[in-house]
Picture 1 (cartoon, rainbow, N blue to C red):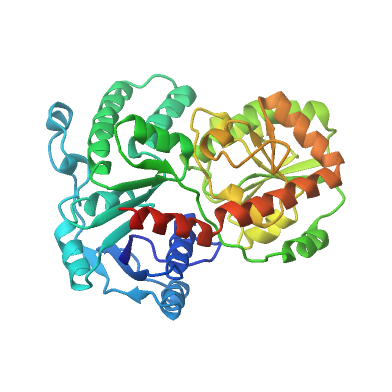
Picture 2 (cartoon, helix red, strand yellow):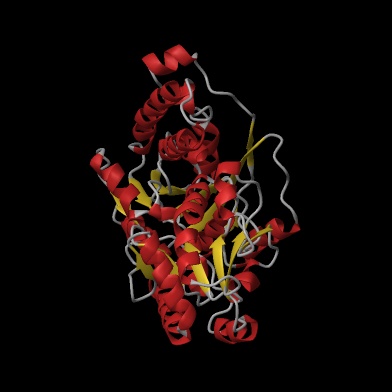
Length: 417
């Protein structure tokens, strides 16, 4: 089978770039090793975007070295959505929300010249729409349903800032986006979503082959994480990673709001001042209403951290409270933490998105803020427990989330069609 990975991101395995770049690189690399699969890589970009830097060019070269054929890049002109707000509400069509949905012809010609049997689009909303009319077998490797983030952000904005006259109009527009989005996704013969609850959403809305598929991450250190962690961890205070990634991201906003309002007060009841430090990693600014509850000597905003691995290896606990909120999604950060042997602590609802995360096995999962604070305090006093959870998490990554494992599932799905 001749499969083209069509991506809007440059493939690169470095941790200092977006997770999508890592995922694209790892999936493409691993698919190239599958039996009877010939892999091409097509980058589709927009006019005015930055050209690839040296690291991204090196990523392409690394893929070529393992047998991936790099197709000539396609650059599309920047376009705006069509139709008036009234028309979008009254008679929504794909071009009203996805301005590149009619650009499939250029992509189809590129694939035809390469004699492609199938395409796969990883993690790109606009490019998934653009490829939806290409007449080959299509696999969408997807994340959040497009309207979901908008819904959740609007709800959070309303909670933080009160009623806004535009809220109802936004909700109505998002309902039309949802309608059109599902029409587009039905054009894909195969839809693998990296969150089990979102895969169920698509299945409930009529997609005949929507299923949960694992996310992927890169394992930089192998067993070496143990020695690095021993060298970097200090006895005290208890260091807790409270966030990684841009602070303004919808899931991170929700998680940090919950951390500050719910978990931190409970943790302060259990642990004395100076005995713990929560480190918030990631660029950007938080709204005052989210930041204020996080102020204090026990919370440090570190901003963008060039060597995020070192920061995570030096921390005793990796805490993610995003899925304690209404916005329940899958995250590569759990996999990143597992590759570093981190003791992951989270809300139990993370298992709705990533069922491999299990309390007492590879993570410590609480049912509410009080329970989460108890788990943090317990882990802080029990080095053996932290090591047990971290080791089991790494084993889960090795057996379930390596790119080779996920690529085999993708290849199996494609061959079965």
